[in-house]
Length: 429
Image (cartoon, rainbow, N blue to C red; front, top):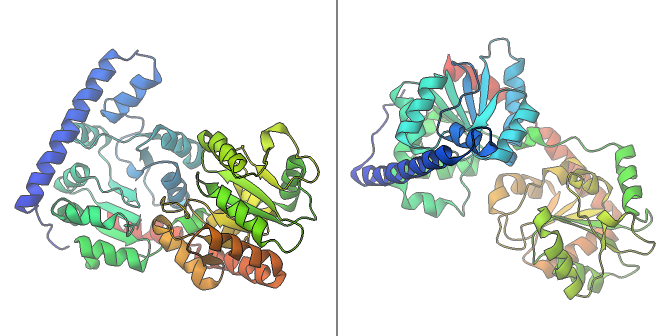
């Protein structure tokens, strides 16, 4: 194995500043823990962040994901590892409480909050956990954690490793900190060839690169059954003879212009639009946005939409995959405003043709393969998005080709979790 480099002088200054800030955060958390009630959730959370509470047996394979989305991506790898007779016990940590809950429910292994990235806290956690190895997903590059693992000769790998173009300049400015942090990794499995190039440019050693691929393809949900799709259509009161467009995981500023554009570009009876905001706290704001633009939206929480309804605000969570399955086309939310986009895989797995705006930087490794396959069209703004959706609605053959291409691309790229499970276990032997 290539010798790991220590931080350059500038990197030592950055690392010192990082440690000072993290130790201050740990001190503040300690004070909060002292003030929190013994039985409170706050006390439990703080004790886990301070490594004063440990939920697993020592010696497990320690897996880490930031929050709910990353846990969802990690879950197929957890499944494959649990199925292997030669796999050790597993522990999952997350950076958020919601991620911890998702890990406990989905992965069925011990789950807790990760330790703060402060030297004293990380050392205390490693003393309790004595992990056999560490596996992190996507961009979880914690300088103190990885240096402490390397100092103990505990293998650490990064899987589905991503570095988006938008975040690259920030990491480059702190290259003196992140290059030696990357050098602490025993292996890196990039999410895509483009991510591999960006990671190498930041200082990662290509000789340590493992299988390239994104776990999110394995995590793409199976489309709902015809019965589930039809049941949701009935619950929402949707006219089965009307074409429907889903605006999925949208943010304020996206739905109003697209609905207006669809109305302007409609050659016949208007298509129906299902507006599904990204978070519940945005339901009212998106409703106000639609009303201000002159679009009367029926809120799904009121019950089935009255006959003739053409805009439904889906103010419910957990139904987006089924919405895509009953839609004729969809807009990928978070791409018409500078958010970076949300995962296209629920729509792709359901065979729903997609349109995406220019802001797809956080999803490039998923968007680009779908675009090359003909399953997704990228546009410059809301007006172009409305025109692209209208063209799909007017062309059943184009919709069918795009939907088939989406399903085929998801099916073709599944299986990365199996490759990674074998690679991870080989790395830690």
